[in-house]
Image 1 (cartoon, rainbow, N blue to C red):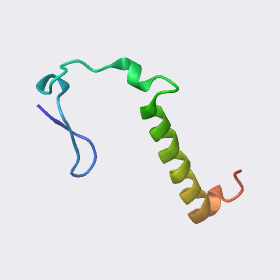
Image 2: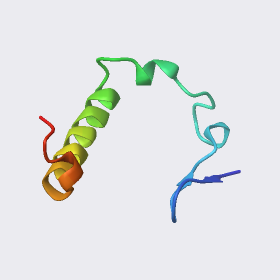
Image 3: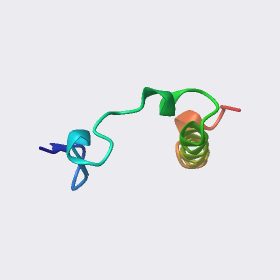
Image 4: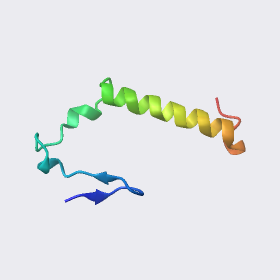
Length: 59
């Protein structure tokens, strides 16, 4: 079973993959996953500040 998340992206059912359980520790601060999330958010915010006048005054 898969759920739709946005346009053409699907989220696989974790029980159908090898591990079977989601590891809640992956979303803890200091993990590689959260580092990638932080980098992506910084990039998105930089783009928003550069392109949207409502965000132009943010630092």
